[in-house]
Structure formats: structure tokens, C-alpha cells
Image 1 (cartoon, rainbow, N blue to C red):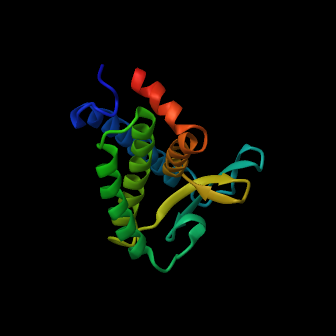
Image 2 (tube, rainbow, N blue to C red; image 1 turned 180 degrees about the horizontal axis):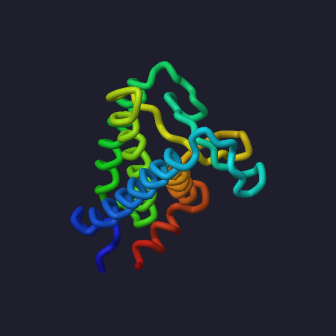
Image 3 (cartoon, rainbow, N blue to C red; image 1 turned 120 degrees about the vertical axis):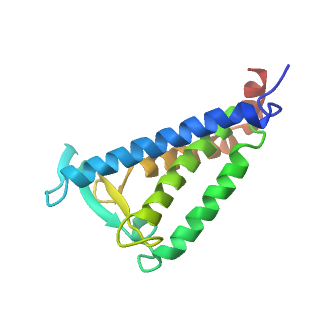
Length: 170
């Protein structure tokens, strides 16, 4: 019986690529929509004030931390993409591979923003448009990054050995 951890890299690459490319495509498409539909508008309520659509350009990291160091975030994101690719194709349970694929898709799309959006190469601002009750404003890539991080943490917090054993039996 072949386990998910013993499958060759070639068997994992299609899943990693499919998930990452899907995240990049959906994120970039929704950012394109937000940039065409939301400029100059008041926040658009989706679930009252709890969830609104509001266009922002974020030069920093989460919560606009480090807004003056955009080029540093570009380098960090590029390194993260390389590391995530390396880990995503290594033998791992399917849940971990999926989690790393979500993280990879989110990181790649943020890297694309940093590289190719205004104000210039490696200094681009990330397009954010989903306002969560005024706590923070994010995008689809942020949702993928959050979900990927949670998927990595759940097995570690709640019996990773049993989750791995169940995955190996499939």
C-alpha cells in the first residue's frame, strides 16, 4: 500500500499547482473587479457593517505594518514562495500538502502585487477590499493564507498522528 507520504513528487505537483493557480486566478480577478467597481465609493455593505467592500492599497504587511518597507516585504515574500514550493512537493499528508498549496497561492499573488502594481517594481501595493468590521481589510489571498495556516495548525493541536494515520490509510 502506497501512502501519501511515500508518493513521488510527481503525484503531488498537480494538486499543489491546481490549488495555487486557482488562488492566484480568483484573487487577481477579484482585485481587478474591486479596482473597477469600488474606487471613490463609500463602503458597500455585504453583511451590514460586519462585512463590507472597501478598496484600499496596502504598502505594508498585515494591518499595514511596515508601510515604508515595501521592498523588504517583496524579498520576504519571494523567499517564502521558494520555501513553500520546496515544502509543498516534499512527502507529506494530503492535508499538509493542501495547506502548503493554499499558502503558496496566497504568497504568489501577494508577490505579484508587490512586483507589478503601483507605485513600481518591487514596491507595489497589495489590493485589499474585504473589510471585516473595521478590524482589517483583506483579499482572497489573505483568506487562502489564513485557511492554509489553520490547516497546518489543526493536526498539530488536535492529534496530528491520528490525522496522518487516517490519511496514510487512504
